[in-house]
Image (spheres, chains in turn yellow, purple):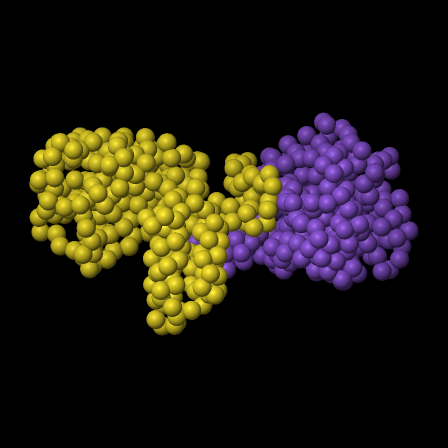
Length: 301
Length: 301
């Protein structure tokens, strides 16, 4: 069975009864698994981590919209995190037995469904974007809910689905498809923050580095060291091992060594297997050789 | 649910109807999965790869013995592979959610059951062995079926379960528990077989190398290179990455580089994850962070 991950961000992080009501509505959908719910009161935002096949997610996400639109009023919503809708962002992420194309189609189908049911404007983003100018979430969200009516009045910002004006209380939503994010940090055996910043600048795309790396240099004051803190946005095209090796090379230029690295949160198995293949110079390796994969593929008889 | 692998070796590799009959009997056991059946006519032997929990295997293995004892007569059996019984060897192997201790207990329970049902002598081997002299399969099997009656007449070779004389047609069986084997080869960019042999000798336990490595140097004539061909018998205590790095170091001493390595057949996911952790210097990593593991642990709701 295909596994697709979905990480909807909802503009409510302070009322536990609203958040648990939304989680319950999701758990009631057959075949849909709620892996995690993280709420942040300062951001006034909750992040749900869901997994299921396309059918389960196509049933679950409209239920989430229904509950969130009923409970959340953006006119009175305040929080540190930028947002333009009650359900703000919904990315679909291929994990196992599902392609990016499946996730793009799912994003479009859910966008059309939700726009029609709730009369809500929807923008498609990342791999589901209809045009390059709409790939980037920050560009779509710029101006936030408060600036949405003025933004939507421009022909360039007509939504991909739904009405050409904001929903009065729920704003708009951004739905799309993207690769899994890997939060990956490398700790350096030095107190020199300038070195961490220079390395971050060398490896991230925005200043000339690797295509799918976002990076910054930060101090870890309690440990007296510095860190290159990164998001890897496509581990297939910019794999973990290449990022690690490049950071190690750049650090050597300053006489600095890598102390350790860390993966924060979840990581697809294939991202780790790729590192094993690279360093062990494994030729002709296939995921079918992973014992657990073979066992799981066969139905019990 | 726990996954235990079991790889029974049966002394029949020439009569397809017998082999498929045994496979069908195994498939009929609830919860037991038949992952693979490999038969070799020259060896006159078949290797079944099974997976299931302890209960499924405790039900399935006696069914395999029943079919094999009815169909196979060791008095007329000929083949290149050493053997002492109709069902010759039955290793239980912990894969996921099962400890070695569980597999040892399972081996003992199945041995007692099979010995009583079929009046068959059983030896326990590897991690299930009752004494160090019985750990090694080759020691137990030395003399084969033809020498079994004389061997069993010695008090030192009294079986762990069952009668103190061979079964007239089915001989005896060796049942035990062991770690998964990884067949791992490293190809060297040289034609010098002496280098492959020296490296094999340096890394294998029998001549002073790593505890859980068996190795030999062989030529790959069609490619004009040589190979260090290995079996890793405990990937937790002697991990793949350490073997790879040691072979690379030894090769450097002869001015030879590693061309590539290869894993033949199946490998537990944890053996690859360990290599990623080592080379990426990953601190504080846990298998719970592998996305697929998290998804699978939760029941669909």
